[in-house]
Image 1 (tube, one colour):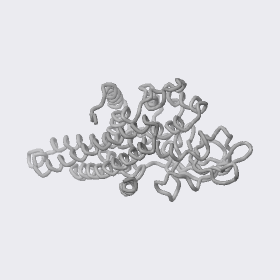
Image 2 (cartoon, one colour):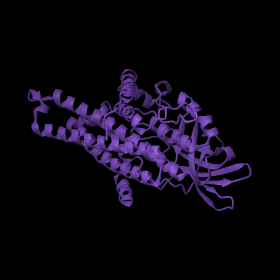
Image 3 (spheres, helix red, strand yellow):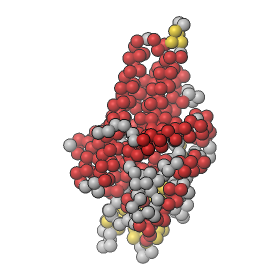
Length: 388
């Protein structure tokens, strides 16, 4: 397996890194987090201009204008986002919302939404998690009842990242079969401003904007159904694995920043007339942080490569199984490494490591959030064991 990025991937990451260094420093990020929307439209437009929104979308029929790339093509860019602690919902839009439209939607639906997503004018948030069901992806409480005109949607979703800024919500729900039975999990394209849709916004621990969303007798046309009724679960599982691979890459970037910042602090912080970094015990702890991050990087690359391989193979059952195993293994390692690196970074900075003014404390929050998103270590250990 090749653990090196291609020249094109490095160039994209370098361009993004330079942009973030010049336009997304820590003070700018704090201003964005404190703003009413919690994101910057100018930054989002720049992401689209750099092609981040197009990389992983299909180029098959030419209508969408995607580049036909995969998780590996986005890894280096997501690392840069992790280092800068980007709060714009790029990962959720690319990895979940747009991917579900690209994979589950009809040609007409792809043509309706993906060109706008690519140019930055459309944002797509996935509403999948339900209250009280932790990481379960198969919807139960959210229901879509068939009518002559289309569907009536009822239910609730929680922690929908980017919901308030989304042009459309991609909502998972149980749908009716033609005989009145349960067709299974389906996906629907829903206007967040439609009558009956209520958003309760919140801020996540890492500074992103999310919302709990309530659907109360929301009338949907037949065209709102994304793809076929009852066949959405495999698409949801694949998109979640894809997004998890991107999340692992984001964690690698955040851990890289934590290691770099901590090493610099050990070199410059002086006690008794000499840098504290000359203390051999602290050097050993720094080495352990680097080892954890490098092991996590290898697992993240493995997960991304398996996600891409499954997609290239047409998502055969065996490749899907390998994808799920690799993603779960990576997420377990990422969660462990994120905990170790973030906690050690704070400890080695001392009391100032948890102050609001220091970027390392916000890195700690991001890594804490990453360890829980899309399944914590226990969840993925169970999934890995079930697939073995």
